[in-house]
Image 1 (cartoon, one colour):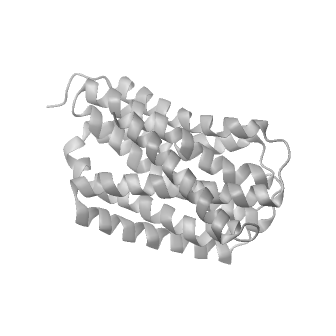
Image 2: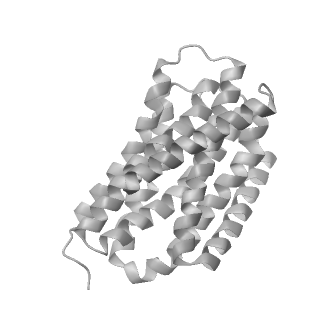
Length: 248
């Protein structure tokens, strides 16, 4: 039997987590000039943030179902490879007057983060199935967690000429599956719980591929290996510390 929580409460809670993603673009509103080294540093920083987020997803999924999480990671890798090949075979429309390669990269990262958001939306709905207090805690944790994820998206888009407000919009768009998935996950919590580790693994697998296939090669065009390693580690540590703080 479900606890006494209204569907509107679950939907609004997940909507807040989605809107929080847009806050990650705000720091880039103060960056007026972007050169090639900043583009490379942004890619390295986004890589560190996404690796830390993937670590968290795998740990969370592994605690519930290790093999299902592994299955999800394989599915995430397969899906992102298929998406990458599909984008390579089709002419990309310009996005905000970006070059074809940049538009492709933009769609890839937004797509990967959108896949991630499906798992987070299920997480919000399942948590409210455990009661209002648990739901509020998980919602707050995901909302705060989404801010640096929005920053990771903005770090890829803004240096390529996308206005900050549009980058914030794309960040929020990538999180819209959260309110869409939270309500059905709450209503059918017993059906969604076994699927959650697969969703978490899928998102992690897609993000890890994005880091090594797209972001780090971008960073390597303008930064030394030592500088890339430093930026990635600092970003990873910052995100990990952030996750530890909101978990306690």
